[in-house]
Image 1 (tube, one colour):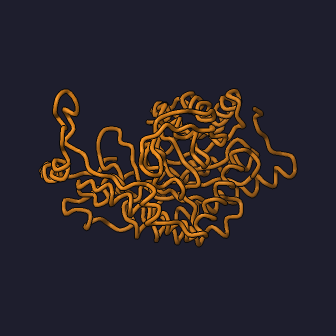
Image 2 (image 1 turned 90 degrees about the vertical axis):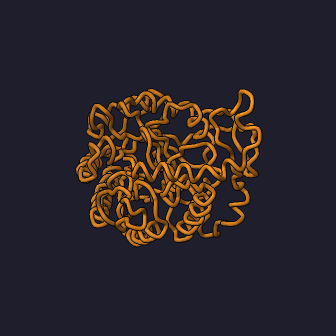
Image 3 (image 1 turned 135 degrees about the vertical axis):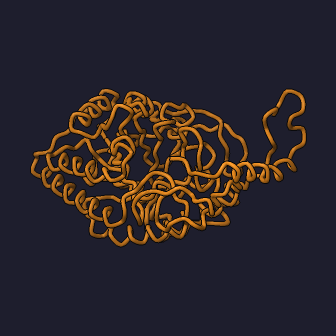
Length: 391
């Protein structure tokens, strides 16, 4: 949902923040080129930012272990359930650390789960709205992207050093050079799952990547994305030094489908899982389905997320092997809020400024319920009573 900003404030911010861009202009708006470009500003190089905010050895190990666990789960080797849980988007680094501390403390009791925290800094918008911490870290229309990248990476480094694995949505083709080494899992969103650029990007990711079904509920675009990303690609990108380059990838074998519902309604029920597993199998992959408890599956009401998770848990307890994970939008406190006229300093603590989230107490209850179901399914596997559609 878009963050509300008073029109008069937005206009003033827009005028005020063109100044540094105008100073960068040289031949912009000359001839036929850049007729609608205000100007350009220097962008910090990925290698420099990684040097300024390096990962610790423990953080590197945290990322490596979670990548391996996630890959084994989507390949059907590890019987645990992958959980991508956390704020819809991060707007307050201190809040993110607070949430990560709570998540870290509960992880040891969840033996049937592999838990990865959502670390979403970029938000796709249906029309317009706040596009995330990297684009506008001060939530005031100043669009200090260099600041967003710097503070964003510093936060990710801190979280991984705490032992909390991270996952994110791959929204543009440049940011991964700044953040990719901190991530253990990635998603291609419903609005970009058909995009060739994003399929190419996923083909070179060093971690498992899930493709969401389209906003219209179409699963074909997701399976097409999987097939594309699993093959090698050659495309335009940037290096760690920030130079334009031709990128060649090997292809990503750890791709999978994310069911998030759509305009036609939810798609997390047994019949939807069967249909998705069949399509994934026919595409040549081991059925590996993550159910997004939010978005279309919750009918855009965060309070429905426990209902979705209960259905998933019941299917797991029935021996369903095609379900390998869930996504949960969660925060310290429930609901969502718009940015008030007073600005971000007046925001309520622990409440999302994008999609609505369940609170921490509900999150902990959901995780324990899912863990119970996962352990029961693992018992069924050992007894030979589980079921999977074969590729």
